[in-house]
Amino acid sequence: MKTIKRFLFFAIAATSAAAVIQELSQPQEQRTWHGTVFGIPYDFRVPTFERIKESMWNPEDERLFTPRPFGVGWSLNIARLLQMVRETSETDSDDGA
Image (tube, rainbow, N blue to C red; front, top):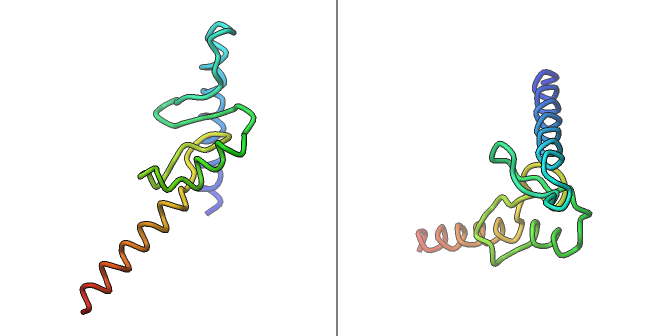
C-alpha cells in the first residue's frame, strides 16, 4: 500500500509540474492557469464558489467525474451520482413488480 501511495504522490506531483511548465512556456498574456496536460485537467486559478458548485454539484452535467475546481484531476459530481442511484433504484423496483 505504501508503494501505491508513493506512486500516486509522484504521479500527481509530476502532472502538476508539467501543467505549471506548460503554462510558463507560454507568453504571460496567454497564460490561463487551467487546461489539460496528458489529458488530465488542471486548474490553478483561485477557486470560486461557482466553480466548486459546478464541479461537485451540477445536475445539468451528465458527467460523473468533472475537472477539479482547483488542482489536478477530477472531482465527483455528487448530483449526477444521486441521479444515477435514483435511476438504478427505479429500474430495480420496476423489475420486481
